[in-house]
Length: 119
Length: 110
Image (cartoon, rainbow over all chains, first blue to last red):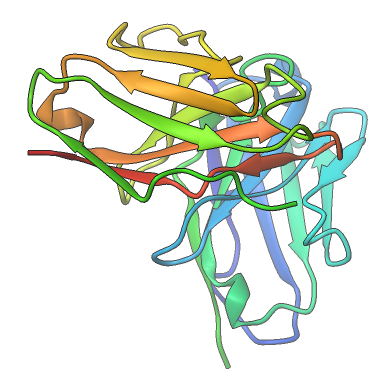
């Protein structure tokens, strides 16, 4: 059973860069092609951040496109998220997710990690 | 792109059926059958309950069903149970090579 685990700093200063990694355990990251990030600010709804394929193709939320980047490391079985120039509005629980099948990108979820943007 | 529109809250008594709507545009819900639904109990990871409009993943109760008409997708929960009390979100693929979530619906079992 493939499991996902988010890791990274829980506190980031305003204007700095948020970096998270999603470790894939119990199987190879090559089990599916697309890997995604979703976030939920406190008291608000879910927001799709973007996705990356094993080949490195990315699709991002248009509202975040200028600040977000993703990468995949097949050798180390993980994929990553970077979000630059963060503000308090980026405070959220961040989830990494793997696809169920084509065009069903959010099949299996990690437990999520809270990232707070504050000085 | 704007979030898909869902009712803020829906309630029902145990055993009843409720329906949650998810209204988008011809650039998302109306353009593709790539609509999914999630159940989210706060503090836990969201769970996929419907994909591609009406398909259920393995292990999901057949009390959950999905449909779509034009720019609006719908989730119906039949035989409402106390454990169905949660937040529900739809998501759709869009013509901008991205996905957009719905605003979310809080389901209360009376």
